[in-house]
Image (tube, rainbow, N blue to C red; front, side, top):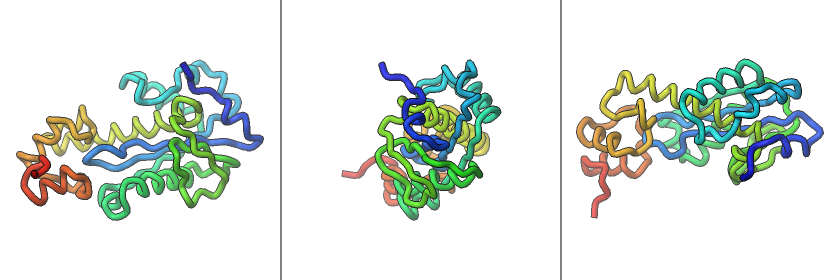
Length: 211
């Protein structure tokens, strides 16, 4: 099994950061991106061995690694809100969040490793798209952890004000509880109106596809 390491970073003779985004699939909440640079002296720290694809981590481990990464690495975080997602579509919103995360790192990088198969157009440095990058690059994996923890926390906070949708557990994804909550209680300003279940609700009063 392939595990994330620094092979891709070490192919460059410049400072290399990893960029990843989280939240393309949810019906509600922002898409969040993070950019992380892991300094050479941090690579040997014990927590680095546990840095991997954020989807494979428990909440407790995600929280712990977020704390370690943000304490020892240089990072930037950015988000694109639902209204902007609806305006430009989720792919462009994801790329824009990545661009903003790079700006937020506030450090000049020589190269960026981007999770996925598409590159943001407005990065000021050369970049490489890495399919399944969070399982190949430690820098991308670290970015995925920072982005996921940040976004999940946003949704947990929103769940306190909007208790009908189960966001504390589904973080905005289209679970049965989330869809049922929409059908009974309607939508919020945090819902993405360009997504099919929300469009269905606006048109027909139900999230279910009409035949």
